[in-house]
Amino acid sequence: MPVTPLTAVVAGHICLDIIPAISHRGGFEQAFAPGRLLEVGAAALATGGAVSNTGLALHKLGIPTRLMGKVGDDIFGRAILTILESYHPTLVDRMIVSRGEASSYSVVISPPHVDRIFLHYPGANDTFGAADIQLPDLNDVSLFHFGYPPLMRRLYADGGIELAAILRTVKERHITTSLDMARPDPQADAGRADWPTILRRALPYVDVFLPSFEEILFMLDRDRFEALKRASGADELILLADGPLLRNLADRLLSWGARAVGIKLGDQGLYLRTSASSRRWDDMGAGFPTAAAVEAWRGRELLAPCFFVEMVGTTGAGDSTVAGFLAALLHGMAPEEALTRAVAVGACNVEAADATSGVQSWDAVEKRMKTGWKRRSVTMPLSGWNWDARRAVWVGPGDQGRR
Image (cartoon, rainbow, N blue to C red; front, side, top):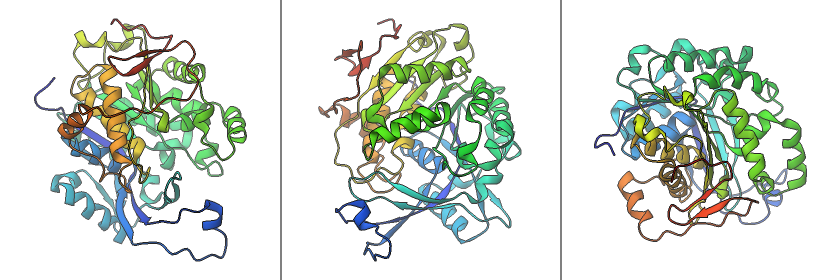
C-alpha cells in the first residue's frame, strides 16, 4: 500500500444544498399535504453535487484532491466557495466562477427514515463543457472522477459529445477515469435524452463506472424501470432486483467500453462486475494498482453488504460510497477490500443529515472495521452466489477471481 495517497481530481456538478431539519415521523403524504404548514428546524447549508460530496469525502479520507466545478458570481456561488474553503483553502483553486450566471442549488427534503427528495436548479452546471477542463490542472493527477452529467445540460446534449470529449482528453494523459451518474427528472430534457448512445460514446474512456441501480436501469431499460416501479409501489425499486438483472446491466456497460462497473444498491450494498479481457486492462492509468495487482481485478463479480448504523439522512450516501471505493483504489487495494471500504464510508455518511459531515478519516474507518462492525443482510435474490466469510463479500457465479 502506498505511503502517500495519489492525487485525485473530482469534476462535474456542484450546488448549494439547503437542508431543513425535519423531525416529523408521521406519513409522508400527511406531512406534505397541500396547504399545510409543517414546522421544521433550522436549515443546514452545505455544498452538494458530486464535486462537493465525493471530492470532500476523498479529502476527509486523506486523498490529495482538487475540485473542478462551475458556480455563478452570486450569493449562492460565494456561499459554495466559502464552505469549500472552510475544509481547506486550496480546494477552491480550480473552481470556475462564471460571471453573469446563477449558481445551482437544491432544497433537500429528508424526513427521518424516508429517502430524500430534491428540488433542484442546475444553474451554471448546464454550461460546463470540455473547454472548462484546463490541462495544466491535470498535472501529477492519478485519478479523474466526473459526476452527475445528467444534471449538466451541455454534457447530455448532442448525444454526449462534450462528455466523451472530456473523458477522452483525460484518458489520453494516462489518468485513471471514473464516472458517476444521477437519475434525471423523467419529465425534463435529461430524462428524454438518448442515454444508451451517450454511454456508448463515453464508456470507452471510462475505467470505473459507478452508477446506482435505479439510475442505470432508467437509462438502459426504461420499460423495465417503469414496470418495476409499478410493482414496487411505495417500496424501493432495488428490492425487486436480483443477481441476473445486475449482471445483465453490468455486462452491457462492459461491452460498451467500461473496465469495471460498480452498481450502488442502497442498503443492499455495492455490486462489482469487471471485464475478463486482459487486453482491456492494459492501460488503466496512473491511479490503478500495479500490473501485478490487475489480475486480482480482472473477471470479478462481487457484492459487499452494508454495515449496520443508525441512519439520520441519506444525502450523499452514494457519493461517499464512491469516495470510499476510489480511495481504496488509490491505496492499491484488491476489489474485495475496495468494496468493503466503499460501503463502510457510505455507512458513516448516513449517520449525519448532510452529505459529508458523517465521513470519517481513513484511519478511523479502518479502526471501526476492526471492532466487529456488523453487516446487514442482503435480501435480494442471489441464486448461485456464495458467501466468502473471510473477505465478507458475496461471490457471484460470473466471478473468475484467482483466490
